Amino acid sequence: MFIGGMITSFLVLLGYMWKEAHSNRVRHVTLSFPHFPDHCPPLTIFFISDIHRRVVSFRMLEEVRRKAHLVVIGGDLVEKGVPEARVRENVRRLQAVAPVYFVWGNNDDEVDYDLQSLLEEERVHVLKNKAKVWEHGGVPVALIGVGDVSRKEADIDRALEHVPPQSFRILACHNPAIVARLREEHYISLVLSGHTHGGQIRFFSIGFYEKGGLKWQGSTAVLTSNGYGTTGVPLRLGAPAETHLITIVPGKLTLEKKCLSKTGKTM
Image (cartoon, rainbow, N blue to C red; front, side):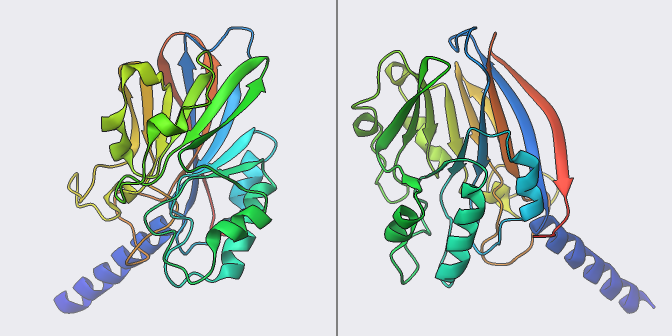
């Protein structure tokens, strides 16, 4: 009886861990910044990182469709063994939400096909030590993408070369270690990163990496996602899969977690 109960409990735990790894959460976060002009309408970003082997859920994307102005893929779109057709389908699903921007992760060069060419064919904006600047409500906004820190490919100064000094600046980098390289004169308002998977499997508060979340470093908001996919084993514990719908508004430096949405596994 005891052994049977242990086996049952173990199988239940495995089922829960598999479910957490394949859930489709969209975390809604509102950030306000005093230097985001009062006359500027809210800017909304759908952020998804570390997709790895997963197929992006249609149902989840329906929740953010017509809400996001742009989609940012925070690296590790793929890993070794992910077929080209799956990557192309994931990108097309995200393109149906809003224009897609991509920064490289440490696993993105493991495939045996040309990911750069695939992304260009699918009209994805690849940002590697470069920036995309556009006007939002008459205000210049810069999305600054840098290379992966672990591969020593990140160059913030190069990425900022053609960014207007008065722009509202968002920095996307796969690895949150980029924060250590930020300087006050970079004037970065928001950092988007992934890579750590929040530890992926945590026992109570213990994990190989810190759990994902949002912190302030001075006047810079730093969001690190648990990620959407997994690496190694398709299981999670204490660091559930997640994506983020981030809305930027004018006002005092504040963070408002509006809600947590969790949809099913339907794709």
